[in-house]
Length: 169
Ligand code: S3P
Image: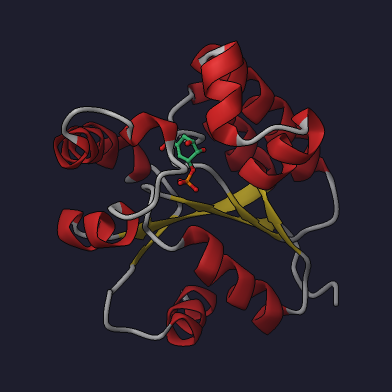
């Protein structure tokens, strides 16, 4: 434990594999794994979908920033973030100061295959979720590209090997 100087912050779209890869990466590095969505859910005692529904997205984003701030100040770890977390400039600054950001980049088709049967993501509860995912993907890619490192999240690569790639990067 404790070889890591800064928290590794995984950013990228829903379905990029941030949680799956992050869990393995933390194991490889011998540090804790944390997930910003999970921390928000624990603190609010509600699901992400319920928070969006009852309190609205701006409330969720405020909580997300607070959680990021708190976690980034803690012991260095691997931190998986929700797909929208890196979009706010204030969040990016916090990450830049206190962590190393890694964008897990994946093609739209890969993302879609991973999220299409899951109903837990409120932003994809639209009439045409694939189109919604596509437009978020297009709009967000230039922002994710501001991350310190980019690692391609390939559909055919086992999650352990993906984690090794991130560690090597
Ligand atoms: C969001 C992604 C979700 C979650 C929320 C909003 C987004 O996390 O934070 O539904 O804005 O892309 P995942 O990227 O883990 O699915």
